[in-house]
Image (tube, rainbow, N blue to C red; front, side):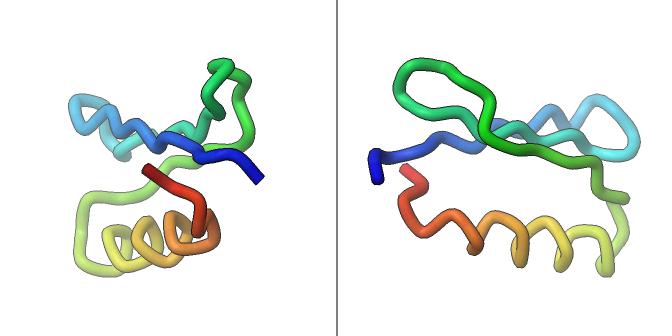
Length: 53
């Protein structure tokens, strides 16, 4: 599988992330709270994309 990029928009509350491939096709994303549990959930989600750049 090709590499993916994970972008975070921390200005929105909750924080919004989007996962895109090299062609900028959306592959996934989510909204996470900005507290410790939300951050931990965001890290766990990002780790499901081992091809991340």
